[in-house]
Length: 243
Image (cartoon, rainbow, N blue to C red):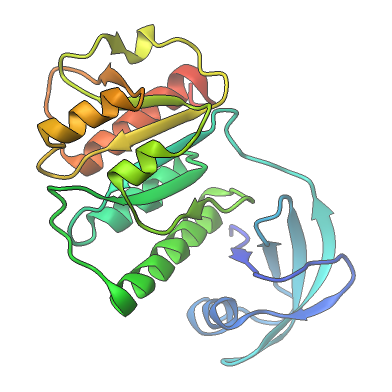
């Protein structure tokens, strides 16, 4: 049986006894129904992971002893910052989950003129928290010990205006570059993916003004969630750790 990986948002130290936080305890005690003497793998997003053994397990409280630290990493050598225009329904959650599994380092949800999602105030704050939890859950599943940041929502223009040394890429069916002909990025990649209806002509012009290079991803028009994951996979195959 695979040892469950659990994110713990607290300092971890070999030899110490700790109470798992509420979300982790609920998952271990209620969902997995794990018992004393069973093993867990803990990580706190700061690098490496910890072997732990359950000392006490109940529906409301789980206590574990941390036994051993392993300085292991499954991070890609390619740093990708995904700027994803918010998509409807569970498509955004799916994109965040799978992009984390594929090794993306940072995700910034974006507003654009054709974005069909309307969120503000408390609803937006709760959605932000939910997106970050999805990123954490994806790390638990895929073995990453660093948790990608899901940044606060920005407008497309604000995001494109940020100072960066990353290679800037956007998708276009008549682009100059394909993935196979891109120059090697030196400081990572900043990738923008538009909404279901695509970026407007004005927004495409803005990407050019802000130094984004157009990249060809094949002859077919892809849905936004397909485009982001296909582009990330292709870039990881060319410059990262997928082969």
